[in-house]
Amino acid sequence: MSATGGAGSFHGLPGLITIQQHIIANQRRHSEATGEFSFLLSGITIATKVLASKVRKAGLVDIFGATGEQNVQGETVQKLDRIANDLLMHCIGYRRSVGALASEENETVVDLTETGRAGKYLVLFDPLDGSSNIDVNIPTGTIFSILVRPDRSEWSEAGDVQAEILQAGVRQVGAGYVLYSGATTLVYTTGNGVHQFVLDPEIGAFVLVKERITVPARKKVYSVNEANSGSFPAEVRRYLDWTKTEAAGYSSRYVGSFVADFHRILMQGGIFLYPPTAKAPSGKLRLMYEANPMSLLIEQAGGSAIDGNGRILEKTPKKLHERTPLYIGSKDEVAVVEGFLRGKGAPAA
Image 1: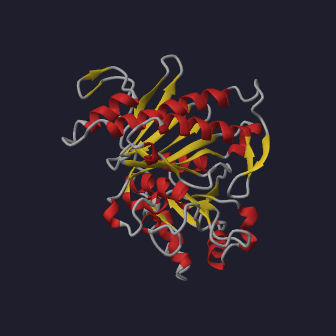
Image 2: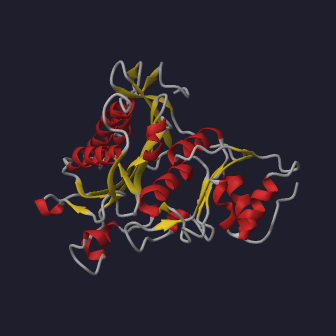
Image 3: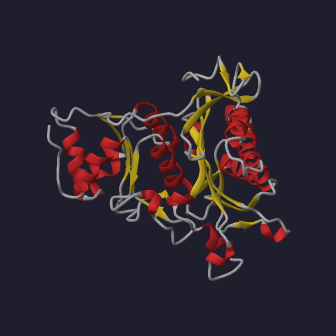
């Protein structure tokens, strides 16, 4: 299989490879597969295709602006936030393999087991990352994370779905994002590499364009909101000062939409930083909705993700909307930042 999916064949299938074909082909590699996981992923693709259409029409219909409400995070809810959240809840919630849903926009877990279903999977998502940028036509995205519902015997409180969902990121069985931009791009992993698809509007399907993405180990590009740098930890400020020296030779690229910044780094290399600040001493990004899924993707592509003390995927969340610092990207670039955080300073030339 070549890097692009527009020609050739994939497991005997000629021509274009859709995400449904790709998921089914991967499912066949596992004799124990029942098709439930594939059906779950199809719910995500349906919701994001509808949402992509809404985003494209944002200037033509009344979905610009805020609702006048605030979410559990204390953030202003945009009209498209609500639309995106409802779409994902509806499309994924109908999959009987899903036991619970958790959204950045909802205060608590939506327990679907109360309807009598077994619900093998737990799905978490940020319905519309960067939604405040919609009004100015800057890329936005959807991020999702999939966990297996643990055996109830593992938990002291039987039936406590909120406790069941508080799992370390290393236990994710799938993760991905959709980037709504010039093209609608879906990137996902189920622990067997990272794969990229683009929505072809003529056929209404996500089509494979690249398999087994590998992030470059080194790329002298960093992405951070430097307006907050005055309250960054001293070690991070020293790193940023060093990057600006002629000897270091770094460039800065920052969109302000996490999915867009991450996608560029996944494709081209570099590092994204969101350190602790005076306003957000525990970090701003959500561990379970943003940091965990992106960390699984970057590690599957050969990169790294840390919180300054250790690997993101090894953190066990204590609450549903927990926040975390995040340093994520090319393996060597993350190692350089980690060196500064540990007081080692600039790497040897």
